[in-house]
Length: 237
Image 1 (tube, rainbow, N blue to C red):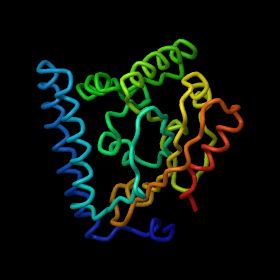
Image 2: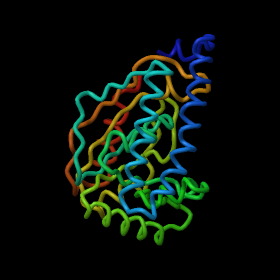
Image 3: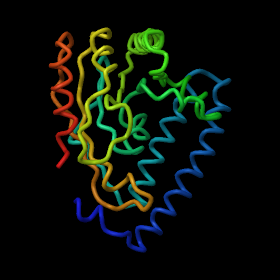
Image 4: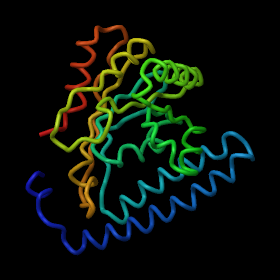
């Protein structure tokens, strides 16, 4: 896959990608407007629109880009913290489609995006602001516990940001702290979206997920970090 990733784009990939950008992002603008209009009508209406947005992405990926998704028979559940490899926007946009009303730890800057940020906050995005230190961590824990009490799964990208396919950076220090204080089991998730999706001219193929064995709460920091790091990199070359 590495040699393919380094090759230049074919005309068909360029045309497919252009069609994808127009269809998905054009549809996204419309769905954001619809979601905002739904908020005064009831607290759950706009959540349906968020799932529609994520499902629209999956449809555009399959039909326009020729990308299929292999989840390995995954069945989502609540009461766990999913720790996901982050190679592109693909796995972030997929979350409402794959998980039942996920509550997601996200960079605080994302919640400043006009309109989209307001919907994300109401939906269940939990702001991660590393500059604020302990006070930010307390706010994250409060929000996370509130959402888990409602039976919603938690999602975190423990590397903290998107990383190139094949790289294995250390996990962010805050991951182990959240794991300890939340007291939840962790399901590590490997995903290899980078070679196909994290590029201007996207390529057809299959994006695979691999869900690791559930890791119980209460492990020492070095153990939980080592197990999650190994599991989320299971699809790396």
